[in-house]
Length: 96
Image: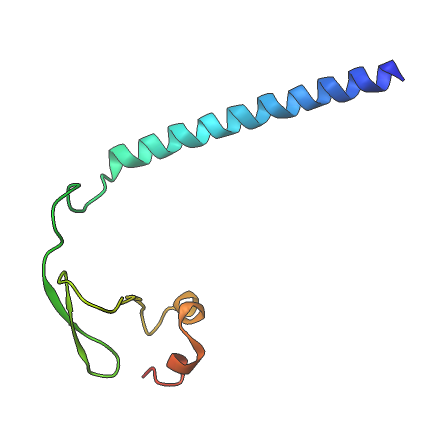
């Protein structure tokens, strides 16, 4: 019985070490990507620029201003098959 306990303990530690190495390699890869492609965006604490956008129904919305309602923006492409899955069902029938 002790042999099974020892074998399972050794196998567990091997799995933990392998997972740790994989996670560290992913961190290294993400660091390389961040060096090659720096993130674009606003610095922390700076307000977003004010923009006016038109939705699929032709209604204008002001972005970057206080509003009593929340607005969710979905950027899609008419030729993107994966983007089609993100759209609500009622919106799929209205797409050109």
